[in-house]
Length: 299
Length: 292
Image 1 (cartoon, rainbow over the protein chains, first blue to last red):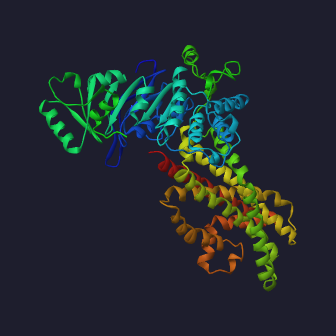
Image 2 (cartoon, chains in turn blue, green):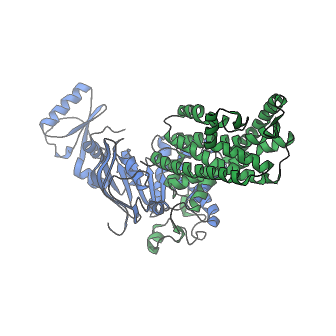
Image 3 (cartoon, rainbow over the protein chains, first blue to last red):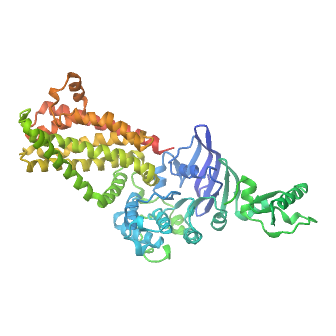
């Protein structure tokens, strides 16, 4: 393990009965980096995240978080981690301020600093005006911001975000992105699982693509795109019959395609010569990589 | 959402708190001084979990207090004036004195076993509260210990309600009454742990019905709270001897009307053994439930 790694996993395996949720992964996240763990539902992302807080114990392999060996020394690591779960588990009967005060204490913020820590977290969440509102009265977006601020109240060195924007409308998602981006700017290490491609593309320095419990690709988003999807993608729209025709033509020429609703996307369109198909050329994206690697449909 | 950049800033940041700025974090390189001792059953972790309980309690204490006071009033009215007319004296006590002390232990039972079962189940299954707590520097052992301790403190306080009510019905307690909250706490610790264990085993909240009918109701009835155990068939009398609630009832009566050192030490022993055993089982089962 390199000295500056905030997270290091080696040969980590986790089984639930006959199901192998995580099937031997190696992963390193450098201090100050934002890593996106990208994969379809059921790829093993959440299990991987839970292993980092010792809420799931690996059957095989070694895990280190902030230089602490897990699971034995996990509590010490957790003291310096902020965790934002996928599922909202705020205490709905408490006010925003009370929620943060409880967690400031749980995370051992010294008594004389707690008040300032809570005020600061309220500001991060943009909830200073609503500090004394009960969680039940907050909107979905406010609750999610509070959930994130709860994970930041003790100024963690490492933040684990599990699907931070799942189920939120686009505007709220944008707000959260700027919040996560601000963390990254401040040098906090971030590990974020997501199945939204755009999220990973915008925020992550590096991406690890997971499928069926394995990491199938790892690197900078732009490098992954070049390696797995080339430079350009040709999108052809049309009725189903026409799309089948295009797919047949493309596969004759050895080109890979993927179907997304009403269109067929032909990958590595820059290599195509004399292929007379009308369509829209666009830059290849991480979404193309994702589909090529995981065979999954994108939301 | 101006976030971290402004306001409290660096000036108010204590030397111990890890800074959000990457530069400061990496520059220092030293482990955070506030980490301190991190071992098993840390007071800081237990206090943290209990601070959540206390904060949540400020939201519903009124309804809890109301029901804790109303219930013994109703019991004492029904039994005291109903049965009390038929039964002038029981085991050397007036019926009001007998029931007034008997329901102290049952109040400790109900105010511990039900929160142990229902709120534990709701917190880990529906509210996912324990997922959030275990992501913080808190282990299952500390989590269960804090929850059980908090419930027991409440049991120790609320088991006094029937006694206070009984005073208005004519009960005159001796000085040993000051021990009653401790007996309530000890009784509550065992039964709260028992409730947490049941919650850890339960697949759905309906499963609790089996436990309530088959275990809790018999324990409650064969404890000498409402009628003396001595009058029961031999089998029931033997069962009473291993029923922690029976020992709790006995202790409360003796505390209020005069201690009997040997019998009372045995009763304390039974309650302590029950509490420690159930506490460890509760931790063991909750860990299996909460950690994958």
